[in-house]
Length: 404
Image (cartoon, rainbow, N blue to C red; front, side, top):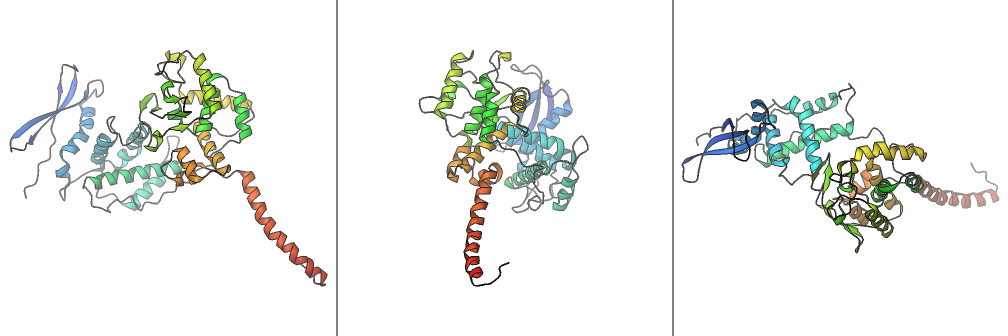
């Protein structure tokens, strides 16, 4: 069988009616009749890729797609950077729907910052399990400190996703993922904080206006921050007391939700719904397509920036309330899950309320046993044991035996 030619194509500078200055990739392929046909694909504008080198990098993912059959041939050199380009174009593009916007942004950053610089020029057939383990152990931040184990675990998991992508496209054989046996702990540096009900009440007393409502919604629904700030008034069903999760927002960009389960409706307590209605009545942005937490600085065109609200409003309010715990937006989601479990709710119900794919995430990652419940459980065990011991000791003493 004749070996197929590798389609590198020709990158050129061009002008189009819709876009004045842009980059195009030209290549030849054989159509169904056996005739050679010239194809052209738009790569991007000059503003997006100011140099030809940058445009060449952007075109690599398309070249990988053109050469999918060629890449399956034994002995053909396929590098990790080629795999990264193909994965980025097929799975992390704006049109791809498999991942949420936040996941795409984080994956792109990890690929650019960690994986491509070290492994880019390595053949996908030459990546070895032990080499990856050694590399992960040596990763450092810009300040010289080692990366946290949880971050290393995310990099390891993304590497595994990359090689599974290669297996899916038959560039590697089934079972040939070298990352499968890579050992990497995901142990946290510290246990995430959760708030007690009294602490939540103290925090709310220090907050005013929509910021109080933000925290109330977060801690009574478990919404992720990307979902909370992406809410619009048309998402609130006041008649049925529920929230329809339609979108998420991350770094100012609006996209789809994290998972299919994330788009399930969220029940809304009537007291929280009443607070929402009051806020709608006094808000300057109350149309159905307006953001619930619209920022006045942008004339309502964008919602508040979550990190700015946390840093400038919520954390100072927590300090005024005497709360010294490390607090982020995810603290409210963990608190919600922990309180549900502490109240004895059915695990399946908690999973559905948290909108997790399975109950393992709910129990192992998000929920913590509250100290008073652990103490009560311990006391019940001790009472059962020591009560029986006392009943045994009484007759022994009556018969003149010493007890130790």
